[in-house]
Amino acid sequence: MGEILITFIKQSTAYKLTRAASKSNIAVRLVQAPKELSAGGCSYGVLAKRSELSRLVSLCRQYGIEYRRILAVYTDVSGKKTYSQI
Image (cartoon, rainbow, N blue to C red; front, side, top):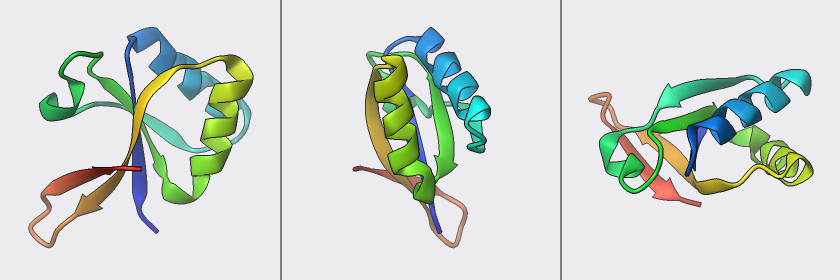
């Protein structure tokens, strides 16, 4: 199934998406973004199932939530996570 990580420029927008997703019954988690992904922006992101991508982007548009980027999250057999921009 896979996961996505949405990163933000400001912490308040990460919280705003988390609240909007909750109201829309979309399961998300507010997480600390890895250092290599948070340079030049806030250190928070929203983690969700990849299948929820279109719904989350729609919520961002609906509520005027600006995100920095959307990344696919991959975990190898050793547990190390890598990210690829969507």
